[in-house]
Image 1: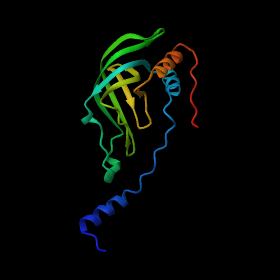
Image 2 (image 1 turned 180 degrees about the vertical axis):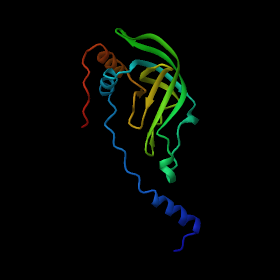
Image 3 (image 1 turned 90 degrees about the vertical axis):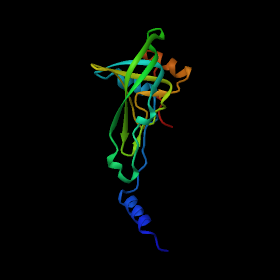
Image 4 (image 1 turned 90 degrees about the horizontal axis):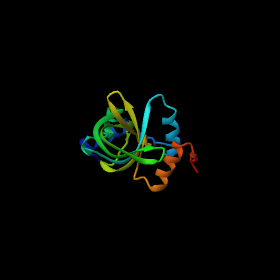
Length: 166
């Protein structure tokens, strides 16, 4: 069987880029994320509410040139909801945030453009940032009541157990 020159060139390019290895992540765990941000030198705010941004700004991976994938993409976004206090998510919190979408090789975070999120927002001199990565980062999309309760327990020094992988 003879391949057309165009198909042969495409196959050669795909093979030259090498096989993509699988991405291996620990399960995205709220307690582990809380421990990390709580011990960080930077200031973080726990937030629950909606995140909105232009989905067309998410990075796209060119599988034929994976090295061209940016390590991070900064996207202007808006949040609206409540920040966490000692009594729960009860402090109105809204405004602009910079969404940082990280890529690990050809794997990039793909956060939903509109939806509810439990997030740890880093406070920078320029404002707030929210980092997402292919393994989750500082955002938990579609949180349920149990997750919000766990965030509150972690914040107030209550039970905050890391869930170990099975």
